[in-house]
Structure formats: structure tokens, C-alpha cells
Length: 288
Length: 161
Image 1 (spheres, each protein chain N blue to C red):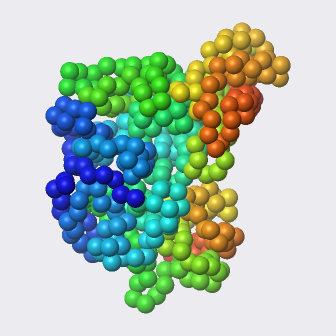
Image 2 (image 1 turned 90 degrees about the vertical axis):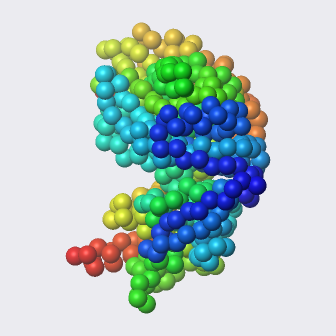
Image 3 (image 1 turned 60 degrees about the horizontal axis):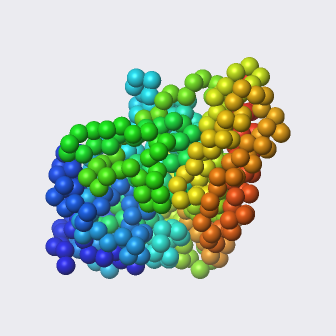
């Protein structure tokens, strides 16, 4: 399988890439790690006439702490996330999530920005971003805007990102010390997308829940923020009963696509189970 | 048809130049233009790892990399492992531990294990299984593949000491 015909460009700077994007408009696609787009191009699900490779733009790489945020260049690879000392120490949820993405070879190429901007509900970073309260920096020739992850995902392969924009950076507010976390992902095998997965961050306030965020992967056309489930937990002790009730609320918003991974009922049930597991693990890690 | 592009990179330490359509995949350039048929085409869909090569210090599936992305890159394939008639420790390990049956996955397995041992010279069995999970063996000979990697790790450590 070989992709259809296209012209290839490897700009060295963001302005150069934006210039190409402006010139070719909707006929162009941005190439990040290529492990979603190239397979789609082989299958003819995508047939861009012009492919703009962001891989040679060094300013799109790197992980640093600045102004109370962790800032991650959009072209930072999954493998770089996994081995980042900064993330291991201050945002281990992202490391745990990245370790569960696909396989080692894919993680050397696959990027966080590509995973997010692709808009595939099966991708893992979108729910991780929702749970972490992240925001995304989008740049066009007209300037830069910062949009919250919450609200960014509009539909399957559809996000707030416009065709003349490049995602340059992911900003994650530094999780408070003693924040519990977990990404619980059910998958049939290494390399598969999630049957269902849940990302949780949790801060206890004494014996009750202070802050909690719950986000779900691959059980609707977009990642889901389980707001009602979160609300049900805040300010109350975290017990097996409250966890089960929150999982029921999370299940109530699921609208999964039916495929070989299971029917809607099964996937919804698994979203509930992953929510329970993620909450329990987060509780043990919350330093309470 | 899109204009062909000249691409220069290093293949197993030697400079090579090819002229390719932008849509050409690295695996096809390696096998058909550069006659390096060690990397195999298994699934063509980024799943099996038979086409794994080492690209600038990364294990990648060469069915999911465009050759035009490889300008100035350093590529290592299984053809680059044996030096002066001496097998690489991984090749020796796979031979002695019966790490292959049909052999189809072996070039990809060895090339992946090479990068794994560079990053983690003394991996546990669990680590080997986790970090080799992108390579499938349809003979299901995983036990001996793990042993082969363990033997190679020991041999490399002993040689370095």
C-alpha cells in the first residue's frame, strides 16, 4: 500500500510552514509523526495534494516548565514524553498515558500535537488533556490564540483548529503536589485503540474530595468530560459506593461507535469499569 | 505525478543517494532501489514490525516513513550488523537460543532489540517484552526471542567490561 500522489515540503520554521499552508489551503495537510495520517493516506481516506512535514522545525519540540505551566512543543514524541524527567516528577499522568499508546516504534514517531489535532476519539491524549485542564496554542499567519482542551474536540476528526492553523504548543497547568492520577485503558492488544479508557486527576481535601477531573476515551464521537460524575464526588468522602455512583454517571453520557471492539452496551460498561479503576488508583496515589 | 526528489542519507554507514516520488515509502526504497531486502514487508499497516529499521537512533517501521523524510538521516538495517565476518551479539544470541523459526520477523526483531539494548543495556524480561511489543512473531517464538535478547545483553556487557 502506497499513498496517492502528493507534493512534499519540509519547512524549517513555523512562518515557512504557515506560508505553505496559506498557499495551498485545503489541499494541504500537516504531517506530524505520520502514524495516523500516512496510514489514512495509504487507505485513500486522506488524499492531500500537498504534504507539509513539520518534522524539521526544531522550535516545535521540547518540554519545559514556565509560568506555572508545563509547556510541550507539539512535535514532541510519545517516547520523549515517557523519558522526560520533568513529566515523570510533575505530571506522571502524561507518562502513564504515553506508555499505553500503541507500541515502541510508533511512540518514537507519534507526537502529542498530532495525536490531539487529529481529532480521533480513539486517541489517548485528548482525554488526558481534559483531565489535566490543558490548553493548546494555535498559530496562523494572523497571530496566535490559546484554546482550552475542554471544548476543543467538536466531533470525529473535527476540532476547533482551522485549516490555516498549526498547533505549536500544549500547556498544562502544573498539577498540585499530592495530586492523585490514573489512566486506566482497556485494549484488546498492544497497538490497538482503547475499547474504553478513563483519565482521572484527584486532589483530596482531608477526608473528602477536593478537586477531581474525569475524562473518557473512545466512547463517543469526541473525548468526554464526565462533569456530572465529577460533581457527584466533590466535597464528599471517596468510598466504593460514591465511586460506583460516579461510574454510573460517566456511563450515562457514553455514546460509543459499534465496531469489532464491542457493542455499545459492552463499551459503555467498560467505560464505567475504567472510571472505577482510575478513581481507585488515583485515590491510592493522592497522598491522603 | 509529483516531481521526484533527490534524497541523500547514510545506510549502514555508507552514503547513498536516491531519487524518489514523495509518496515512496522507506521500505520500498530500501528493498527495491538499494537492494537491502533484510527489512521485510509483513503487514504494510504499521502493526507487525517486520520492516523495522533504525533511523537516527529510533526504531521505526519503514512502511510508515516516507523516504523524503530521510534526508541526511542515518539508517541501520540488519545488513549492517555483521562486521568483518563476525556476527553481532544479537545475531549470535538469536542463533544460539533458537530465537527464530521461519525467520521472517527476525531482521525487525534484531534491529528493534539493538535500539532497546542501547537505551537499556540490562533489561528485565518484563522490560524486554514491553519494549519489543511492536514486533510480532507469527511462529509465536517469543520465549526464545526474549532469551536471545538476554544472551546478547550479557555478551555485550562482557565485551565492554
